[in-house]
Image (cartoon, rainbow, N blue to C red):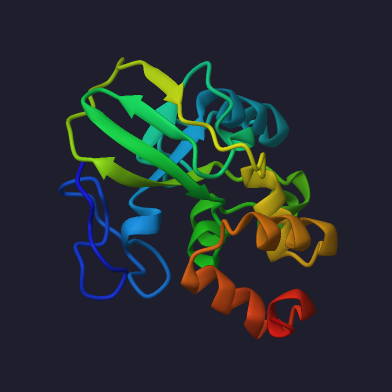
Length: 187
């Protein structure tokens, strides 16, 4: 793992030799690593009636026993010799829809409200299968990944929480401002 640099002009992924198909919308320091809990994949497997292998959602870190979806933004995790920081939710895209090949997939995914989490690489290092995750440095603001996810889909209370906590990066603020969220255009 390494910090990939900016979304435009950097390495793309924080995982060396990882491929990102849509560099315009994905990658960069705030989306260096994408984590999904194995338990979430298992839940979706039951819903869809088919097995979902690790990596099926495009994640490059699949955890066991860690509630990735409810992580507080800004929380740091030690994994192997790397330190990673939770930066926010995954916003599903058309590529994900096509990859899953499920009718109504994006709507179902958004309605479920759990997206896994994007991470930034704070300390580069090596992560190997079976490495444990140690959670530390959890911010007091308490704004979790699902709250930010709901904010992207117009939940005003969630938007207020993410704005007050200051957990949005510049790209995310711009995305939400483009949707004319009053909380962002008033400032």
